[in-house]
Image (cartoon, rainbow, N blue to C red; front, top):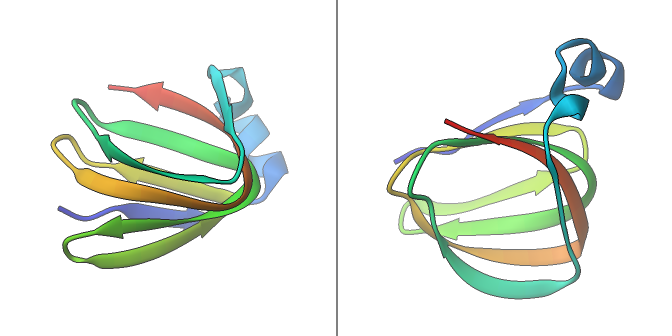
Length: 88
């Protein structure tokens, strides 16, 4: 299962309506997570490493990230994260 990461500036994200999605924030921490559905999110702040069985992916503010349904991972938040997200 692959995570998709696309760098995107905030003006483009705003134009596409990502800032209208619900928000989520989390401080520096580490936790396991399972995705029951596809999640697409736009990071507005922070930095994290997502650890999967296929390897690690670093994400940061300005990234549009899509997590596939069924993914098991560990979030290692290095700088407090803020994101807008949509589940599908």
